[in-house]
Image (cartoon, rainbow over all chains, first blue to last red; front, top):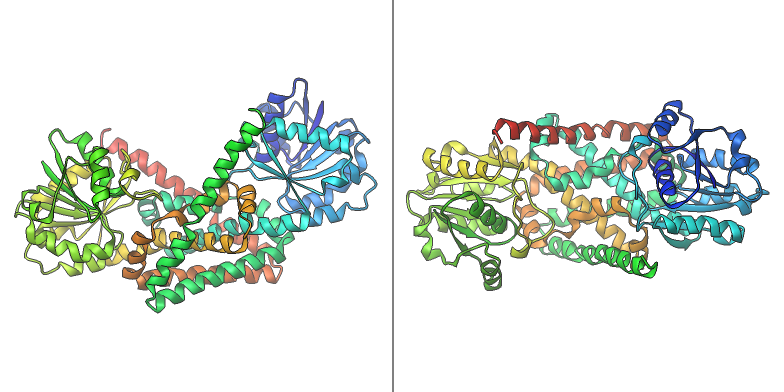
Length: 294
Length: 294
């Protein structure tokens, strides 16, 4: 199988690594704006060959793992190039604009819209790791618009590398993911900003920050090049989550101001329920593994 | 050495465990409002005996690890009971009120105010773990007010269990820690609240939440019984950090509203600097270990 990975960073590179471990015969071709990334990807064995858009007619599978605004431009061009029997899938964190953008493309049936809920705060080909997708959800949008045989090929690969599949329409995807992923990034970035602005003496951050701060601020290490277009393309939903988050913070502040610490306690106690929800995620993982017979 | 741990939960229990591994001859006595916790602590080997306040005259060291509002009441009573050669230290996350409360106590010189920057989101004696304090900072306040020989005894133990020592006055402590620890907890609790309120279908949280959300919301599992009095006693500082956090979030929202994504990018890029700061923490750890000759 000839696989073309467009954008050979954390996600594209990890996908290539996993493919090589589950497929008997696979040749991975890398396409990237950055020649340095391509060289690094070759050196690390993520890809077997550098390639160009003109080579895409040879592809059996194309994996698009670039910032979401670039995908809007690149996906139609990719579809123009691929052959009728190639499946193109992607890893973008917003789906509505992308699906709408190629709705009328003559090769719409060659595209399967995906969003793997996986990643780290790092980026670039050196951040690629084996097993990044294991027990993670891949959200598939508008599955009915993809040719059945091509769906099947992509889904078999996703399952082989350990992903669970969840189907969703693009509008719901973008609304839900704004809460569960995009908002976390803003809360973390703004926490980092608040502390950096205040603590001019970084020794104080060094010495006083515990694992709690490190955990809460981890996402503030994420790539602005990846996240800016996500916030831009999902603007309406993200602003709604921000409004609710700010309103909850203001309410908490008001309770403190009024010395209503009984209610401060209750707010936190109710939110402790997140424990069971997150445990649920893990239980769910275990259940899914059994279900897949692994 | 006879050590009395008052509050045999995550912090007190972990301290007892570590003491037992570094001191040749130590007897640990537990005092706790909860008989269940004491029984569990005995069963887990965290303590050797249950005890009462009347037994405190036998103590060589008392470790106070209870919610900060309870410490305000309990510390003077402990000082009333202990002998002249006993050092009393604590683990509370706010220091100004506590130090002020015992400023004129006849046994002020027996107290060393401490705050170990360590913990997890769990609580109770079953949450106690070995090595919780290794490479963590213990902030010591008003060291000059503690009798030299008693300082020495406590500090030797802190260093033996792997802690770095940092000295600070209580007012600065409470102001800095509001940014680096207390605010993280509120940002996390309110993130959890916002998502739980919106995502009525918890399956959606299960399936869509990645490790990013889990990391950012981790502190929302923390104990309201511990955190409510912290917010109450550090109200002024915490409200100030909340105001700045909310103002930063509003500014981010305004940039989004105005489609000023260039500046959204710059905001995130500047905050990426937190990477180096957090790496600094780790480098600092390594340096400290060498310095201690370990």
